[in-house]
Length: 204
Image (cartoon, rainbow, N blue to C red; front, side, top):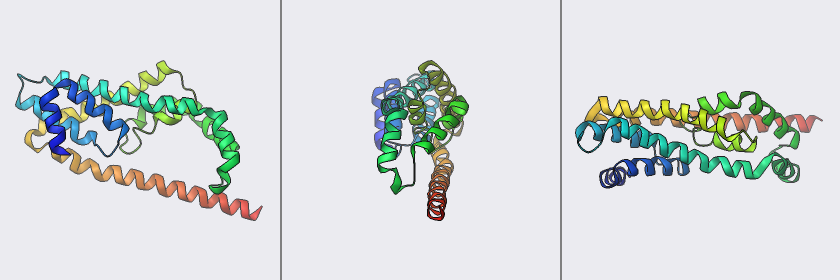
């Protein structure tokens, strides 16, 4: 994968960086924690070919474009469709239409904050677009907070690669465990929630 990322950046330049960050949003196993530090290092090593500001804006463009890909399927599902599916099949996970109403009510209150912070958290930065679409968060606020969060994330990774130079892979080395921990916590929390719901339904 590393060779493919290097070849894409070297052959396509800024467009290659934008493409990689776009694809990273569709296929999370392609890590932004490797793409942007490598791009930052390349800007440092070959300033005549890539500029660090150009690298940053290319990565930001690809990241925001990728976030939109997940926003629209969420909007297509809509709260009404999800409630119908939950009432029909949700009993297997003890999820009801009432649960979806409560979840969406929470997102309506915290949506801006959730999108902004979510874009900074490895493991959920891609998926946060889905509830934003489902809750019908207006497009302009979604784009604003997505761009703001993505700018902080892309900027951090790009600058880290630029500063670390040939040791840019250390960024991925240190952040990869964080992604796994975050995903693990989310999975455990979801399982605990299901078990709790099932106990309640059994008692009643």
